Length: 240
Image (tube, rainbow, N blue to C red; front, top):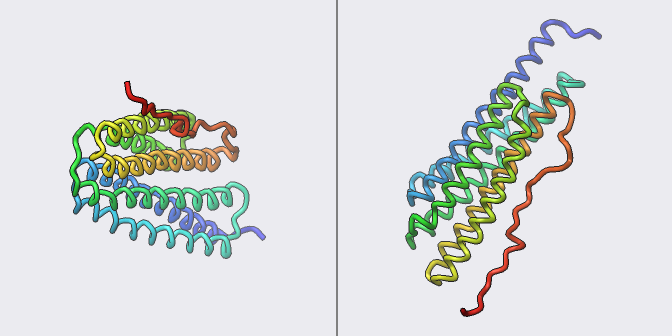
């Protein structure tokens, strides 16, 4: 049966709703990451609390999108490229929700870190790592909005830069802990925060791959540089 113009228009509106919801979730996730890093650097507990509250909004948005997808599949029975986009949208929403969870996790550590205080040196690397992850997230959200894949491979390659920065930061924080045991608690929290930011980069890369699939109908090559090297770090504790 040939779909009526009414059916086609309704389906177009459904797809616009999904795109709008992803843009909404992406904007919120981006702000949450940015605010969580700022809260960590500035020891801003109220800003950290806002991130925690915003995570509920992001979860709600994902639930709304999931419900809409079920209705679209049941009512419109999309095929080919339309079905590809519907399912890829679910994956992107899931990655954005996880990014929000990681930003929330970092915000929950702000209180513990701020109570003990920290030097600028301890959080400088976190700030830089956050800038890299944010740049990557902004790039993939722009790619989704424009349906452009010209820079997708660059986004994926940049994940290797984030991993390298995380490995370097891991080594630096271990050094601070060895030099002064009073830094151990703060540095341990910062290590968890750094790992969360590195994982945000991984989720941004997932989104890049989903966008590529939506636009081209093909999967990117299996090779993906996404492994940090912290498991290879050996700390020399011998006395000089």
